[in-house]
Amino acid sequence: MTTRVALVTGGTGGIGTAICRYLASQGHKVATNYRDEGKARAWQEAQKKAGFDFGLAKGDVADPATAEAMVREVERQLGPVDILINNAGITRDTTFHKMSATQWQDVISTNLGSCFNVTRPVIDGMRERKWGRIVQISSINGQKGQYGQANYAAAKAGMHGFTISLAQENAKFGITVNTVSPGYVGTDMVMAVPEDVRSKIVAQIPVGRLGDPDEIAFAVGFFVDDRARWITGANLAINGGQYMGW
Ligand code: CAA
Ligand code: NAP
Image 1 (cartoon, rainbow, N blue to C red):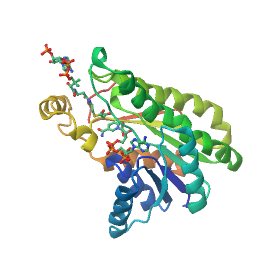
Image 2 (cartoon, helix red, strand yellow; image 1 turned 90 degrees about the vertical axis):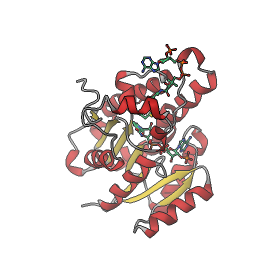
Image 3 (cartoon, rainbow, N blue to C red; image 1 turned 180 degrees about the vertical axis):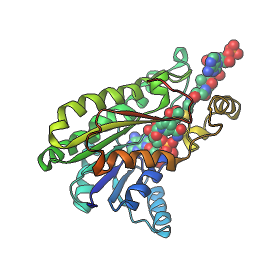
Image 4 (cartoon, protein in one colour; image 1 turned 45 degrees about the vertical axis):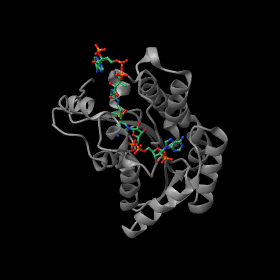
């Protein structure tokens, strides 16, 4: 298989780490971003001990200028980016009638604005080289909505709108653009949901448990594979059966 350069945003988080590792296991060179250098270097060291060597570039995906600088730094370290996984994300859960403009804006800029901020600096190169893989990490709650998540559900639904437009514009350039929509996975993001609320959510999952980050990474790897070249504009739900819309 061909070794390519992959940028996974939010690679230091629960799902992001699993994606970085999976893509590395497929022979790719992988980098991620950081905001807090100390935390990121500790993560990088821990990955090294586990046998993984990941590049790191400073960058806040919610900010266009630093996101572009981050992409250029990854290119400097590893080469042109052929695989982009827009994974970085946050929640600011609260019912809409209590939501502040900041809670709305932070979630929209980080989860949706990031798709523009990070993809825009890589798209020209992918089009010139006639090969690219872009995957958005959306959410079950972008598909079905969620009590307390008007901001997050709007951003996550918007990510798939982004996917299906980019997929059309870039299909002739060997670039596929797809979305993965995970259900509830056992990372810090989900562990921040109050225990009593979380146990009610788990009770709604037919498989009977939270997802594992590796189960999401496997799906990302599927879209990235060379043989997935005719799959574009898809939205793959991976949620233990919690939501089965089609
Ligand atoms: N359906 C119906 N009613 C609900 C409800 C639901 N799902 N959740 C809460 N309520 C009700 C409560 O029973 C309560 O009713 P009463 O007033 O009659 O007692 C009322 O809503 C509470 O409303 P408040 O506005 O006072 O809300 P709150 O301050 O208590 O907080 C919340 C509500 C923040 C939404 C809290 O319930 C919560 O954290 N819910 C989890 C939201 C969630 O799923 N987040 C996902 C995070 S992980 C992630 O995002 C990853 C991913 O993509 C899957
Ligand atoms: P996580 O463990 O909280 O990790 C989030 C990652 O995003 C961290 O590396 C964080 O870096 C980074 N990040 C946040 N804001 C950023 C910003 N402005 N600029 C750069 N990086 C930023 O969360 P996770 O559960 O792995 O979630 C990863 C993605 O999957 C998110 O988009 C999330 O919405 C989505 N998702 C998660 C679930 C789930 O159940 N866990 C389900 C569906 C979808 P810092 O350390 O600097 O904060």
